[in-house]
Structure formats: structure tokens, C-alpha cells
Length: 253
Ligand code: PEP
Image (cartoon, rainbow, N blue to C red; front, side):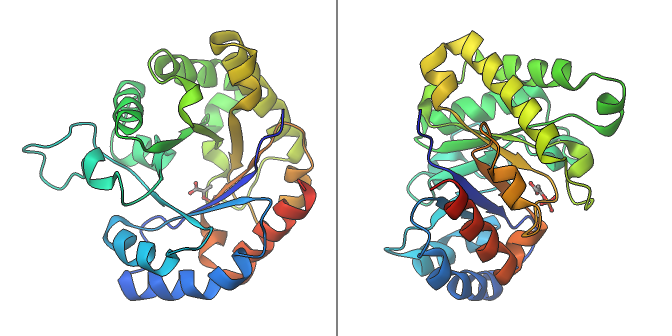
């Protein structure tokens, strides 16, 4: 089954409005050339509107980095799904930094997935094991738990993208090898297939994330089950992000 590859940039808590617009405008002419890959940028909330205007009529898509699961109410500082609907197409949910620093549990992630889908937003659903879980051979168990808590309610036919992001690889410069990432992503696809059927398992796009660079993207993209990358640090560097998108587009042509 043909799956359109995705290269998504998670800008995390970087760039104010002016810098965000400058960054995206600098990348845009090159990113536009790579038509066989879907490109997504996820700036901080405050820059979404300005970046949306900068992206007008381009093929580059916009994503948010988080949302809250209630539609409205007394939740100071939170952003509701209906506020994002119409503003962006994607939303990152369950990023390990949210799980680690903001106490997001699988149950909260599940509510966020459902809220995003209800509001027509496409989740980039992040899962991944910690270093000690990896070293004690619990990777598949952890991923299964993360997938099962959420997959009961969030049907993967609704445009969900899964991002496999081993926590030990995020921001560390220590990416998983292409073989490691492929083995784990193939496992995730098997779980989705068992849970939701072959059509959905074969169609769902699964990205790798964790210290992706212009130097390691090619090997990752050559793997059968890896459909792209969620890129953190390198997505803030124009030449690197453009090179990552270019290589992904050429390899998956
Ligand atoms: C991320 O933020 O999702 C990520 C993978 O970060 P980095 O590429 O910097 O490791």
C-alpha cells in the first residue's frame, strides 16, 4: 500500500512570531520543490496564525504541538481543540516532553486524541520507550501499552500519524539505527494491524523521531515501514530541514 511520506518539524519552545515567520519563509521556496513528501511545520501556539499566513497557498502544512481535551472552560493557559480547528491541520499529541515534564499519562493522551479527531484535527501521536525500558528489554511492552490505551477509542483510520520516538534518542544526538527503528516500527504496524485490521495497519503512516539529521535520514527512509520523520532540533536549521525533506522525497519517490 502506498503511503505518502511525511517530514514534520517540531519547533518546540523556540522562535517568537517574527523569527517563526522568517524561518518558514526562508525554507518555503525549497520545501515547495519536494512534491512526493508531505511537509509539516509545528511552531509554538503564539506563532500559528502568523505562520499560517506565511504558508498561504503553499503545500507546507501546519501543526500545533499540543492541545487540551475540553472544548472550553476554566482551564487557564490551555488551548481547546475548536480553537485549533481551522487554524492548523495537525497536532502533536503525547510527545515525551509533555509526558515527562507536564505529567501527561496514557489516559490524558487518549482524551486528547479523541478530542483532536472530534474536531477534525489530525494527531501526530507520539509513543516511545525510556532508556531503562529499552535496556531492560521492555520496548515492545511499553509501546503496546501506549498503543492499546489509546487505540481503543482513537480509530487509526481518522488520519492519525504515529511517531515512534524513543525517549533516549530525543535531543541527545544518539539516534536509533535505521535497523532498530525499522524493527520497532514494523512491530507497531503489526500491533495496529492486529487491533484494527490490515487495511488500517497497512495505511497508517508511522514516523521515526529522535536526533534525525541530514546525515542519518537517508538510511531511515530506505526502510520499508518508516514513512518519514518527526524532526526536532534539525527542523530549526533551514539547510538541514530542507536536506531532510529532499532526501526523504527522493528516496520514497
Ligand atoms: C522531537 O522533538 O520530537 C525530536 C525528535 O527532537 P530531536 O530531533 O531534536 O531529537
